[in-house]
Length: 514
Ligand code: FAD
Ligand code: SF4
View (cartoon, helix red, strand yellow):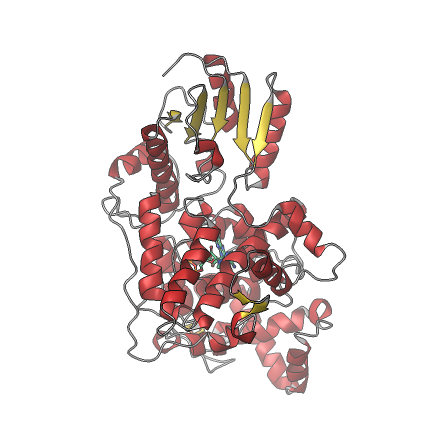
């Protein structure tokens, strides 16, 4: 190490992009700084696997940079010089190494963006922020695309992105003649169907776990620190992607919405942690998927590939665009004025409702649940039960390995809780037990009866579903996508309606006991 550097470049924990142009050239007068700070471990209660995953990946990334000849300063959580604040640590290093220029990559979180902007304004040396070179659509481009449009429909943005990157097109037209093959996907797992085992790693993180525990960081969830299952290097992330291509892609779309007691990730890729830390780039992921499919068209249908590409270049980029267009207001939107506290079984999985029990238990065990478990089980129930979206957000932000606010809050507050009143979704994603029964094997092992709306053992989703529509009528009735549900409700007998309301109220009054 030298005692002076010209430039300090800050690399945040979700900026582990080894392909970034910063690293194309070794510059002896540039010091790269990474740090583990309580500011980041404590702003919400995180799953222990999320904390360990981030720190392990950051440490591996710093080692890689050093091996390539870059000058790196890594501040561990237990370093006595660590002030536990990003900006105070940077300030101290600017002094220590007589830094002349401060540079950082644009943060993806609003709170960090504010903090770093305020910090650079206070600095006496010049500073510069640069793109993370990760996303496929710039924030301004997203807002330009939707300027003057009445609604922010994802599908139109997705088509724009397909054209922009020339993906799955022939002569400017979508391959196979359709833009979206969703209708061919979304099947329930057949009985006795066996999904492949999730591809996991055995990363030893015991020392890190000991250090984090000794530092008194509070956390949620479980971990086996001898065999940490998530990828923490680029090599492992690429291996996980390869496994997805070879083993999961052929049935990814078909069973995208299926849920099972026995298979916690079904055919999902589990690459969101690698993507959100920027270890993998979205373009390399979709290009790999398309290239693999081009060589295996006899085994893999276009619908599997289109569905996957849409998640990455469509939904993921769209959520980021929405986040930057609507923050900070977005984080306090509460369209239904929901105020109920989150039931404590969200932190333990101890509920008789089998769908929630399984989805929550696996989240505690693996820091992961797939999209439909998040949307149609835990999210669905929270919305039907009128839980305060801020509490719902804090749960999702803490519990999942891939949860970073820009993608968590838009999915939770927007897509799942409809707390934005319809910016992300055109209608609330809610269902009665019917959907869960159709798409999973949860109901057969449940203490409740999926067929009953009221009475002893009636599934809570059923009465809460109708009660939700009934009590939110003034806010939803005019929505053309749900008006049919009001016609069905209106046709019901008054006595039946009243017993549904009474049943729902009983459940709402005893949420903790369900
Ligand atoms: P796959 O199903 O294999 O999909 C591949 C990739 O597509 C994912 O890795 C992800 O990068 C992208 N993708 C798919 N759906 C979405 C989506 N709706 N929004 C953004 N990207 C998407 N995703 C996060 O990355 N972080 C979160 O904090 C997060 N919170 C969510 C909260 C709720 C309530 C809901 C309903 C969804 C949330 N999602 C979140 C989206 C999605 O559930 C996860 O991206 C996905 O489950 C990650 O697992 P996978 O890699 O196996 O995904
Ligand atoms: Fe969930 Fe109701 Fe099915 Fe039980 S019966 S698993 S509570 S949907």
